[in-house]
Figure 1 (tube, rainbow, N blue to C red):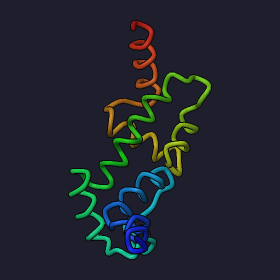
Figure 2: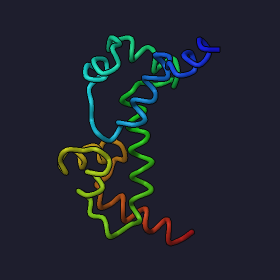
Figure 3: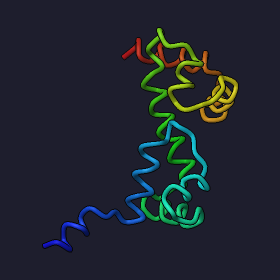
Length: 121
């Protein structure tokens, strides 16, 4: 009984890695920092994460950010840099470059297109 309770409370390295990424994705962290926090080697983190989620940590975070961005776009009370901050970007320039790379258009064009699509639904 006692060992069973301890086993339930202890987390596997896989669970620790996934939980860490899910809880800190918007705060910005390096694999080195994550490894230090979890006491797992950074290369093991990538291997564990890829095995569990089928993608890299960076791509997983980008997917979360894209989903959150598309959710926040219709809220015209939020300015671009505010959305970028909510998504964990340290500067509006980094956010703008990320949007351009992921969506092949500027933030303004993306928002306009999204509002037009939402208006036609």
